[in-house]
Image 1: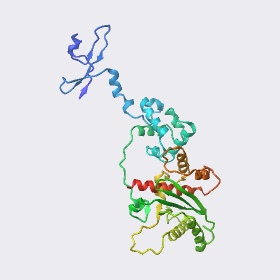
Image 2: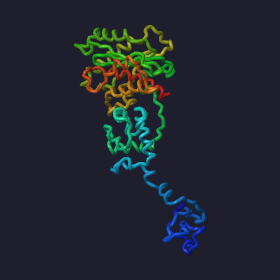
Image 3: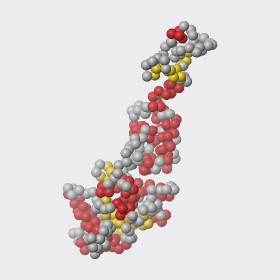
Image 4: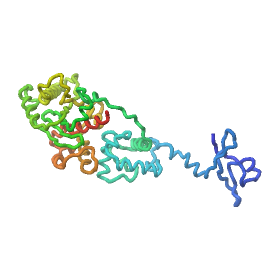
Length: 374
């Protein structure tokens, strides 16, 4: 063990200062003399020594401010809790990270990461740590947790995601990886929306179709078939059709009519989209698959307990990145950006945008989860 002995050695006490052993050395000039740190000494043998530059260097090395994170409940000004280098590192990430990168920081998954991006877009980059608490949902205590997590990230072991966790029925991975395009479909109470996306994460088509006979009267099968057939007739050709699997429980009797409606539309889409007259022994993958709604919600941080919140804000961010970033998460054509630029605003009186949002998010999640599971 190495210690700094805070007393004069016997040699130093006898006045032999210059060039002699001992932790402290008196200068050759001036009065009264001042003690200066000369070396650290080993407590095991008391002979081994390590020179040091001075008390300032030692203090800087063992200073709590450089090795211990700021306390959550300290109440001290945020900028005073960190060194200039630490402040620069924190602000660099907060000012430049994408929502997906921010979501990897503790406490920033979901709404907080989007709030940070929206705040810096509106007000410019953060200049001080104290200004971060102006972001909705980020106050002093949570900001400290975020800052410390940025400085001391926890390396998580990448967990291989099983395809069966989000795709049904289970299919061979190679079939999915060879797909050039998919059509992501989401059913609502009076609409069906879809997004046609290729493996290069480019949106080829994105729209929805009104279904006036949904949830009308006594659920006439012929009326449902007319609406669903009209949707199928305008769908683009694709390698796979991914249909959202709702997470409504059969025990929830209040939502039983909605669940029955969803299952009816889902069954009709499977029947109309799956190729017919294929021999059983033919090794051809199913063309129509289900994707778990909860899996998409967890992927984008939209789950609150077992419920999924709106994905409108996430889609608005994806649309913005498609224009502002060189390598966006997904490429959306300019005509579709113009068409839907006001469709997902908060408080929009026009209903029906949720299915469009969910169809696009499901397509993005499909490719990204497929990549993560490989």
